[in-house]
Image 1 (spheres, rainbow, N blue to C red):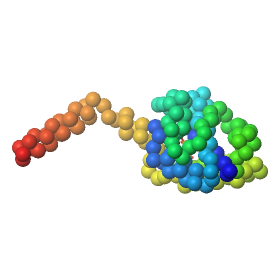
Image 2: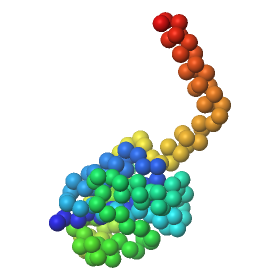
Image 3: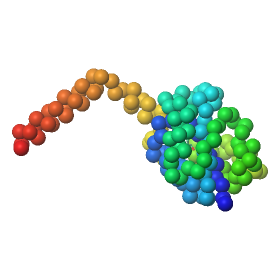
Length: 152
Ligand code: C2G
C-alpha cells in the first residue's frame, strides 16, 4: 500500500485543487489530505470563506481522497509521515524546495500548479458581482428572452 500525503487550505475548491489531488492520488494507493484548520489559516495569513469543517467535508467527499486530517501547524508533517507510514509527500510547485527536509522521511514531489486559477482570483471576481451587476445581467437576459419570443 503506497500512501501519499499532502496539505492545503482548499478554500472554494476549484479545478486546480482537483487536478493536484487526482495527480497525487495516481502516484499510489491511498491519499491523505491535511486540511488547514481555521486557526492554522490565520498563521498562514489566509482567510477562508469556508470553515475548516466545510472545507474538510468537501475535500473528503472527493473520490480521489481516502482520508482527511486537520493541519494544525507547520511541524506536524514529520509526525504524520511516521504515523501514516507515508511513502510520498506531494504538493504544488509553488512550494518548490520548501519541504526538502522531509526527504529523510519519505519521497518528496512538487507538481506543477494548474495555471490561471486561484482562490484569491475567484474571491476577487465574486466580490465584483454586486446588485447592480446582477440587475444588468437580468436586463440583458430579459432582452434575449424578448427576442426569442418575437422569433417564435
Ligand atoms: N494548487 C494547484 N493549482 C492551483 C491552485 C492550487 O495545483 N491553481 C495546489 C497548490 O499547489 C497546493 C494545493 O493545490 O498543493 C492546495 O492549495 P492551497 O489551498 O492554496 O494550499 P496552500 O496555501 O498552498 O497550503 O503546509 C502546506 C500548506 O498548508 C499548503
